[in-house]
Length: 389
Ligand code: RFL
Ligand code: PHB
Image 1 (tube, rainbow, N blue to C red):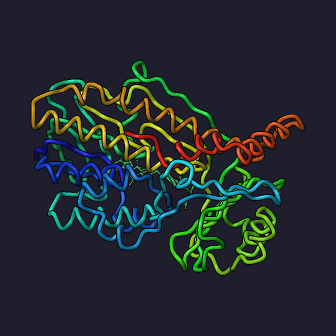
Image 2: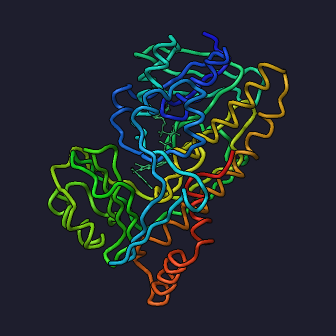
Image 3: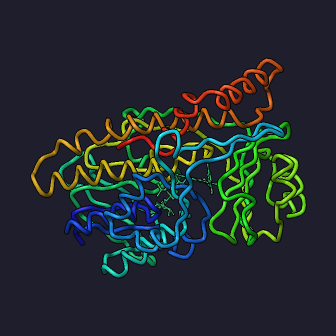
């Protein structure tokens, strides 16, 4: 089999690239290790930058988003009992969109199926060969049968644990990593959200986040220990802990109910450089990870896709390689700013096990400065709504 592009990974990065290329008449096969249902059962991001929404529109997959999404003009930050509003709209005239990653992925799969584009699920033993030559190919097993696809380019959109990054020889790669000494325990519950905007809370007992998916579906997170497991946390224990970490005015009106999903995610900052090796391009979580505190993971994956898509269109439409040659440099320049912001938000709002009394005072001062200083809020708002592509 032959395809102009092979996309490894049918998560949001791979599907978005596939759909954008399809609209330009560029053929791309998507290889996914799991099933569609498995991918759609993963509850992840909720906040989309306007740049990502623009890309979804360009890909022709934003009709449902435009009907069902919620615009958030700001967010609340709490420090213990005190809470203040960062008003993105007022500060910089911009907003973010609340629409779950699950829904984005569903819309992309629906569009892909409607377009008759090829997605091969349940692939195993994916191997990328000849990425540093002019004739790369990908081999894999499907239902026990060995298969091969020859192609021009390969997009490695297979997440942090995929094979694409590992294909780049270790002597070519430089990896930067910071592992945080805590995780996030998240639940989804069929209850009305506690507030119509997100609440990011720093408390003596650790971080908490109140988010949502719609008027009757809430998403909450609490910082937890890396040694905790989901079984350690009954629903009652989760709600009790959440209430203790958010200001009383929110805790008093919080509606609790059974969780319909509960999971723990470790927090990590990670970047690999370069994001290109020959004809292989890494995109999204395959190349970089951020702690979720800044809501940047999915959005940074989308900006990678923007740069790669533009580069591939330039090659196929004009025979010009400038875009793909500069892909890694362009993508990384934006990635590192998202890394910095996510690290800063995480450091500002979490309790680290080794914090000294001095560290705690500095953190408090950092939050107070944000509360009191409009310029500091503008910096936060500019990063949170998303830097330009
Ligand atoms: P994904 O979503 O991991 O998809 C990769 C896909 O590749 C498949 N795969 C393979 N396929 C074929 N062959 C192989 N060898 C393969 N190995 C893997 C996998 O099965 C999978 O389907 O990566 P992608 O597409 O780059 O998307 C990245 C985003 O999923 C991620 O950055 C965000 O979810 C991060 N994130 C958030 N990002 C935001 O922008 N805003 C948020 O509010 C936000 N909240 C979050 C988050 C991530 C979280 N967790 C659980 C990590 C909240 C949480 C709790
Ligand atoms: C979410 O709704 O899942 C969410 C929102 C904001 C974040 C992280 C996760 O920073």
